[in-house]
Length: 135
Image (cartoon, rainbow, N blue to C red; front, top):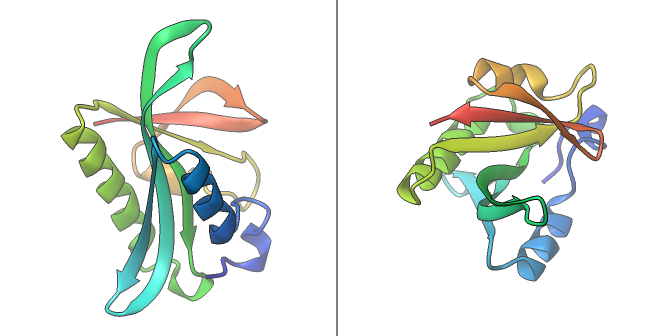
């Protein structure tokens, strides 16, 4: 499943995400997104992860780790569906917030996440903006 060429530097390929899901199996929640029998996207979330255990061991977070929507399936609501599915799972696990990080650049996913109600926290990780959505 390929994203648009101008997005390839924004998100890891699905194969890398699946390898990470195997390594972090206690927290990773990988899911394919289908339209009928056609895969149109991939998401991976994490739940109840200590964000910075040495400094704030009680700061445990739920978040959207990866979101890939196939180039020809973008703009059709699959990304919104994916985020809503992660929100539903986070709520079911007792979460009241969902986090995401993204590359802050032109053509990046920031407008998409802001439209869904995420707001920047002022935190950054690896140069990426961290945003949160109150559930």
